[in-house]
Image (cartoon, rainbow over the protein chains, first blue to last red):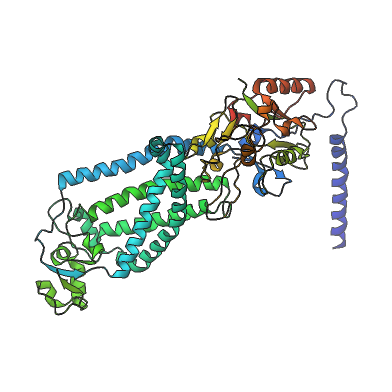
Length: 349
Length: 200
């Protein structure tokens, strides 16, 4: 043991002895060097913008003023974000949103409205209760405001500003911004409600595959059955949940600058927010189309909450059968008989 | 017309922060906002350099490009100004700015950031106020350019590290300095702001 310590000490001494002269040589300039050669070159180890930017995407240092955010000196990524926002974003938005509108118009012209094949029965079946409709319209109304004010901040200066002039447009944009900021919270509330109420009915089932394979009955003459929600509605639901969460998350990062992320993070958040918003608007346009002019008898589900018996038989037979089996809808409804009393989930129209 | 620019000779800057103080005092900039700041890179090492930074008044300014209400104007001197009457405080300019110039009086109140504030190159504001008027002063600060004076930060720089003036003239001064003393760490931010560097 003692021998080992002695050996260790010797080695240590030897290392110091060898290292010391080397260290000394680095510090002292050679006295033999000519006069005109600089003994100290202040530039030799000076930081250089080009080198720093090759090492990292931004140049950061230290700062004396009590504002930590000022530590970032240069971040050229701002130019990249500028390019995305000014060159790429609007064409993407136009292609996706106008493309969807054109596709829907084409769909209407070639496929027409999806009618109730057996005609209206006159018997109504309760489909959505008041809480469900409230949650839907809370989300829907918030989304409409967010979509329009969001489009204004991207397209306003090329569409609305030339029409109403810079001063009026700034006033509109100012209120639009406030609306966008505050309506985000009611949108998030609606989203949470929708998930809480409908997530159980939107879990994918085997019959969804059949529904998708038969094109949902939109293309072709088949009428694939579905539970409370068909595969198309389930896709919309999960898209709304996913895109809504991502839009809300990225939006909150922008709403509370520097709480979570720096400017680089906010650039990414804005890119995510805008791309999701464009897809969201396109998908919701399709959702609005199929819920209104695209399908006979669909809108009343979210209006009065009750739909025609023949409509539900055509589109959600499996759900109707389940409801009858569990007794939530009386047996005689299937035959189209008038209801026993007004308090039942049925109401004659 | 001149093309006004800033050039910080980092080999001369001694991080005294007098430019920061002079700017705050000259324009009575509100608390929490610094139109100019000094950042020290590699502090405490042999290669340490300090750079005084504010709005660089970029060529094809990204802030002006992304502004959703187009509140920016570039003067005939190349100074980038904005109108606080048109500004809606959306924050886009500060996502786009490579130099962290745009700032807001509030940054946390549900995105109600208030009107953006940044260096005006001591050239007043881009609003409708009469140049040199008290209204312009209250909103944007002094209009020294109107009086034939250059930005105060550069004018009072003790080591003349910070240069302001016509691009060609300040580039020439910097070139002469570098040739005389034999070194120079470059015109910081010029490549990003003006897409050009000073050829030596």
